Length: 377
Image (cartoon, rainbow, N blue to C red; front, side):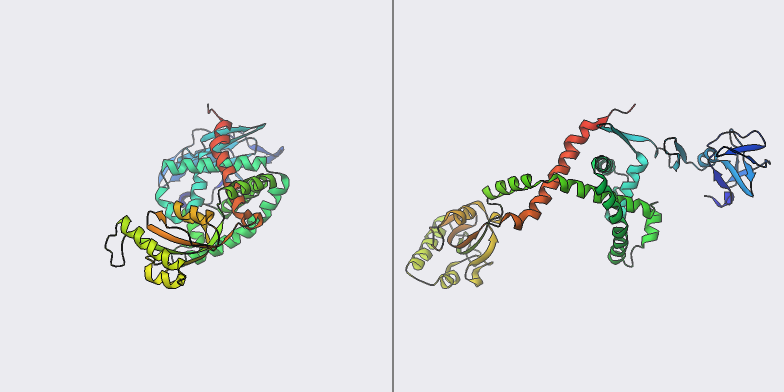
């Protein structure tokens, strides 16, 4: 508040007029003192349209709506919660409304702005998007999703998230200081973004509720079904292979035709079938820089990371046999598969659970939320 009006304690009169020598607080009559008051804002006198100030027990009370509007702010009153809000113009406007079962909720522009500021606190690179409509729309959607999830979560989830948030806030502050040492300071960054620590703690709490809620959506049956699908697609298969790549360019970088590459691959294959050491043949023929000096070996590698032709051969070729040349976009490969392994569910459950949680969240954002949104009057 401007220095000119320091010392004035803003009472919650909201522009109402006091016309007698007594006011009422909590049902009790109190004695107040009225006296003429002059209000200066940056040296400019302004007068309340209605209502006046009064003095009670040494403190001066003035209409809060008058003072806020004189400072270019908007005042809001929530009768249900007894909350007075003073914001930038438009901040109190409701920008979205939802009905989830019997529960109704609204999202105000103020809350969207606050969510955007918290993201900017955690990642200052988002400062460039502070006024970007797309960014603010995303913040509105994510906030609405968190509020929907909060309403659906059970009491135990809500209680544990609240307990977790305080500890996580302390950790976040330490991480912030480490990440931005000498660049940003926690308290000043909060002030710059018009945030309180309680705002950040509430964001952490909602995040914890979200994670716990989504985690509970992943049942054992869903996890087992996802594992079955992933196994059928060989998504987690690992294999140890030795191979020789005859590329479409030679070591000097000169182009090599497919016919020449295939002929060279068959020459290497013939030597292997005649009993020549695989590692020795690799040194003589392979153009793969990633494995030439390791006997052509890729050990316990993810099969899904390889190009289709190579991947198919690794999955189908008999173990410990040298196969016929396999063509890929890189040239021709001579492959010997030494082992194949399919991880158990327990080994990949974390990856699958995260995937299913992300899928559930995406469904909430893209399917549930649009169906729950109400038309604003």
